[in-house]
Length: 359
Image (cartoon, rainbow, N blue to C red; front, side):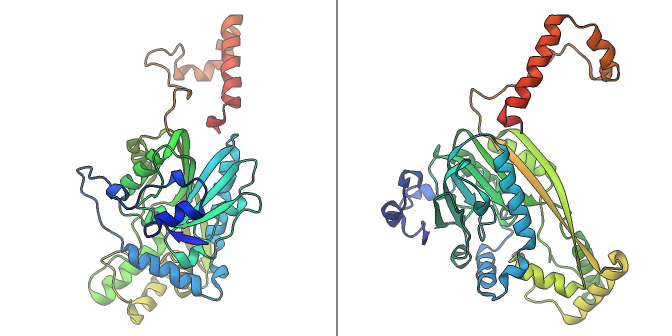
């Protein structure tokens, strides 16, 4: 059963356990606070919901799940790397349950799947071991109370959010102290081949260009936004997947099947046929290989923690007793250590291995 909390908060209290988790949507608390900032309105969220609804009614929608399935499995694997039992997990922008279905009861006790599209949410797969509840909710209006969640995960949905700083801040507020935010977003190099081919073709055939590929964030910008929201002990890594397609047509059709087609406000209603043909020729000339046309999908994985007194603190500036330039002579330095200093270093390394937040 899927429920739209924005319209039916009273029903949420009736059907869902942990009803204390949800905000009171009858008041203005469901709206984002005015932080005195200019929020860029780049994406048409209604169009994105419509894209996901259309993807949900496609008879062969499972054919287009390959990237989201793989990334979802990798995100779930990172959740399992944290040696802790979480009472409440929220899968934000869950899609068809790409992360949730891989989670087990020794890691999570309760899962809430949040998705913008009710039709797609109705197709979401759930964990065979963990009680799971479905909620129709927008990533830009996080529906959970402050200090109510243990972990929030998100896989390949946040790159369509307009107010990303506001979304991160809402997640931060909803987490309990020492809670964790873990997820994955598409990075700036995603589909750069298609972007270049379409821009050159449109410039040639129509005398100008318009955005056809969503603007993606960079690793540095994502880290800054998470830090600004209040998260600490950030860990980020980047991975790239290259998928080969027979032509530009298969690539664009697969993006539509994934519900990853363009939804910027400045988008054109349609691409001219001659422009697409020219883009295919440019794509082949610039990036084509014997097997076909490669498309890059850059995935940025991140993890951030809400501060808590039990978390390790960085050493004070100037407290170091060894210079990094001496690393090359580490073996000689180790031989000169006193037994007390050697034991301190050994204990420190042991603590790093045992601390789950270092994973």
